[in-house]
Length: 126
Image 1 (cartoon, one colour):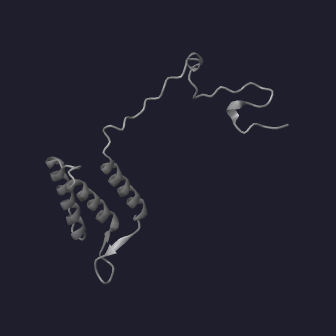
Image 2: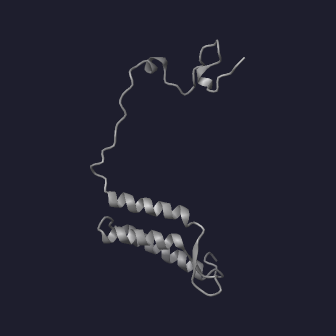
Image 3: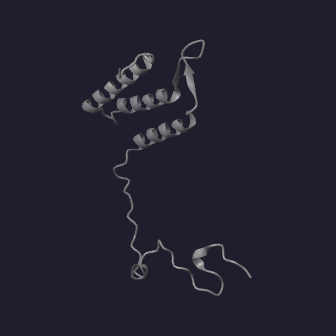
């Protein structure tokens, strides 16, 4: 006796088992529709290339840091350097723009995070 590797095909001599995720029988017999295709007209190849480079560098440089002092205690992540350099290149090419309100919110968050890291011994809630 042999078994079929794909359970959707059923065992030899038996009909196939209907999947719980299959469409209803009436919809299954309808002719298939063509899948919509994405047009490449509005795609900016420079942006796609830089964002792809940024994502690849994020995967490759996750564990790397650049030491800022001789003891090695102060470090900066390589992800920050590469991410902001890609963003800067896109801004110089005028492919990225900054929203003033979002930039102000981001700057406020960075300042609060920096203050939280500079004064870890202080109690902010008491």
